[in-house]
Amino acid sequence: MNSVLVIGGSGFLGSHVVEQLVNDGGYSVTVFDIRQLSESDDGYCSGVRYLQGSIVDSSSIEEAVKTSKPDAVLHTASPVHGLPEKIYYDVNVEGTRNVISACRAAGVKNLVYTSSTGAVWTGQDFHGVSEDRIGLPVKGYDAYHHTKAVGERLVLSAQQDGMNTVILRPCGMTGYRFFSRVEGQWATQDVRRPSERDKQLIWRMAEVHENKQHTVQIGDNTNLIDYAYAGNVAHAHVLACAKLLTQPNTVSGQSFFITNGEPMPP
Ligand code: NAD
Image (cartoon, rainbow, N blue to C red; front, side, top):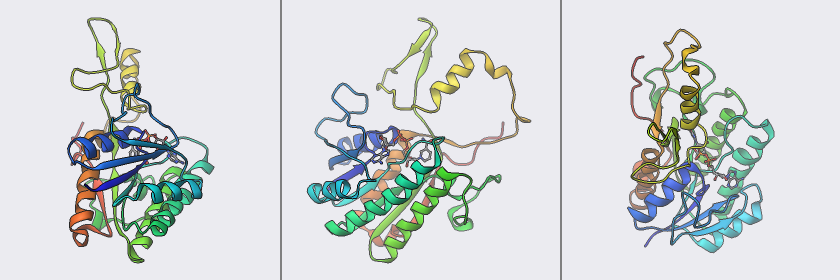
């Protein structure tokens, strides 16, 4: 059985990745995260070993990689968008550097890095771009986007030094949370699976709708934006991990946008 260390595995995307690795992929999974999930938390996956620590602390991540001895590391951790600048440099740059050093020290060769479509964004419009037609900018749009690109560069240089790496660039991710018209209140779960993991997007959109703020229009209503369900983005991580473990030469060194495809016109 292959083993995987999921850094950021308590998060929105990370917990979907963990679930799929365990339930569909048959992997043995360890999570490393500053937030440790317990059994009552949505996203907790039984059979998974949860380690608490920060990738900013080099000895902590080094110890986690050494003791879990993974065949692959999936690095999904990052602060969410909209925080003070320093935290992005600490986590996305120094933290990612620590993850790579920890992999090297423990002899782990396979690394999947979760970046963002925003890594290539400097504020311009994009339509129909592909990985081979756009490179990383010298200066990203803001600290979050810039440091996701710096993280990519660190991962690419690790690949040039002999690691097998895949970079995944998700677009905006959605979970599910819906409004129950019958009860007139927010439901926290749908009929298939509970989910309160989407902390950023759906509930805010839903709240805008509930407060009838959707009657306010910003811009000329021609902006397009691409969203994908977090479970589908997680599936891309499982596929990247499987490829790295079985046919690394077919994917190593590559970056992939993970989207639902061409956005629909409004
Ligand atoms: P999230 O906040 O739900 O998950 C991130 C996890 O990383 C959290 O559990 C957090 O505790 C953990 N973490 C943060 N700092 C850490 C540290 N120093 N050490 C260890 N763990 C740490 O966010 P998410 O939306 O699931 O994002 C996951 C990844 O996807 C991130 O890399 C993010 O940049 C990327 N991404 C997210 C979106 C989106 O729309 N949410 C879009 C594109 C890319």
